[in-house]
Amino acid sequence: MTALVVPDYDEAIAFFRDALGFALVEDSDLGSGKRWVVMAGSHGGKLLLARAADDHQRAAIGNQTGGRVGWFLDTDDFAAAHTRMVAWGVDFTEGPRNEPYGTVAVFNDPWGNRWDLIERRKAA
Image (cartoon, rainbow, N blue to C red; front, top):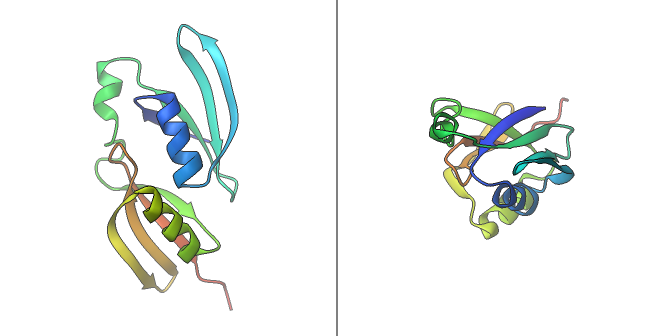
């Protein structure tokens, strides 16, 4: 599981669930406005959505990997995932391209973090 700092729990839940197809597996109230929010991808990866608690954390939102692609969303059906994400308004900064390892496109989450959507080529 990887933590991702976000500005708002509910906005992040909606994006990961509706645009990216993650499942909400836990949303527990920890008191004082803090929650334990876990989203799971279909390939087993999990994100802990952590709401920024101070100015230092808020400054990291959208730049948690220094502008590099930091997360990789695997899919078994690139075309369907890409179509769903475009319809939801996901910001693709690079269009789909074929690489030796599979089909990939780069997108930003709503806060500016860079992701790869990737369907890996099946081994022969």
